[in-house]
Every structure is written in C-alpha cells, then in structure tokens.
Image (cartoon, rainbow, N blue to C red; front, side):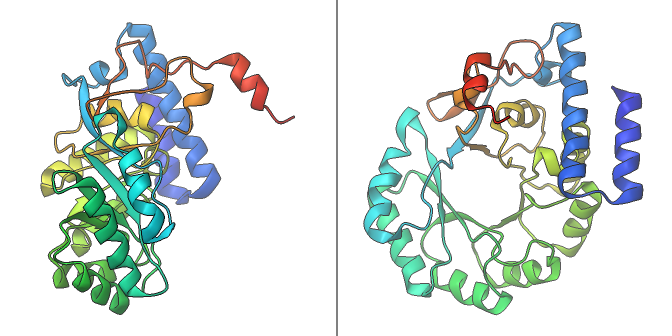
Length: 283
C-alpha cells in the first residue's frame, strides 16, 4: 500500500484533515495494510517486522466516575484474566474525592497492580498542578490528559511540577501534532490513536518519532489492530484493552495473564460475525 499511503498522508498534511474525514482516511490506510498482509499470508505484526506475539495490556473497561464507594468492587472485577493494570477516571468536583477514589481502588487491588488515571482534559493547568500534587504519593503509573489536549505548553508546565508521569497523545491528529508535542516536552509518555494518527502508516511514523525521543508508547482504543502495531513498536508500553467490538467479532482479542495475544491469522485477524452485525444493524 505504499503508493496509497503517500497519497493519504499527503492529504493529511496538505488539508490538515481531522474528525470524520481524517478517521475515514486512516480506516482506508488500515484496510490497505490488512489486505497486503492477507495477500502475503502474514499477520499484520509479522508483515511489519515484529517478532513479539504478546503485549502487556491494562483493562480500561470501567472505573468511570462512580465514586469511592463503588469503585473498589469494579476495580477487582477488572482484574479478571490476570490483568495487572487498570485505569480510573478522575476529575470530581472536589479534589479530595479524586484522592479518596484512588485510595479506595488501591486498597482493593493491592500494591502490585499498576494504576493509571485519566482526567480527560477537564482541568485548568493550575488545578492540574494542585491535584497531581495531592496524588504524588499514590503510586499512579501515569496521569493522562490533565488539561486540554492541544495545550502542549500547559502539559509541559504540569509535567515540570509533578513526579507522576504525564501521558497524552490520543488526540494527536497525525505525526505533525505529535512532533509539536514532543518539541514542547508536553509528556513523559505517548498514546497515539490508530484512527487519529493516520492508520498503520501514521503509527509507524509515530513509533519512529517515539523511539528517537526515547518515549514509551501505549495505544488508545482499537485493541485488535493496536496489538499488531505495538508488537512492531520499539518502545511499546501498554495496550489499552476495551471489549467494545467483541460482540460482533468471530474471534475477539484474547487476553492471557494480562497480555494481549497478537492474532496469528493473516492481516489484522479481524473477522466479523455477520449474524451479530445484522442483529445490531441500523438501516
């Protein structure tokens, strides 16, 4: 798909495509790579030169804004399949509630489980500094998008004031935005989204940028494809596991002992369950 890749990425650069149009182009890019891998009889990861067949995964299927009373039981439930990492959403009205939720979850899961926190861009820079200061000693694996995703200087300020690693990247629309974020020193960690970064082609460029910067790379959503991409990423960190597509797949992504098993079927390994798709189809 190299010629197609050049055309698609040229459109990304020249038009600055975001939103539905940009994601559609990324989808075409991923489909082209899937077709090439199938034609070669290779899993996508192998086509990309990967040798790994598993990548560490954290369970991101819960722990929304449900408070400190309900969070512990849900946190324990998320540890099925041997997960050794989960993510909690924060950003309650009162800063102390954030701390209470993290305390409650940590007591439930113990010290050996990695705990990530996601603010989903909800805080001002000053408030993010205040809240991360309150969470400094809670052994968080990272704090994700504490302020607006395109405020790279704001993220850099937060990063300079906290010992908690700062994570961002799910809202990088292409590698040019990623490069700006890296230049600003906005985060310790990167989390490209396969559909926003530019599909497989965009991800490969993102992985190269991250390797040059020594930045660990995690994925955002699309775990069935992202497992292949992370397997081929030199600085691969964590795969974000969600099971949203599982009901309409013939063979959902397997998790074994907290590791995502990279499909060994040709291409991405995604095969639709047509009956299940028909059941939920809106016409």
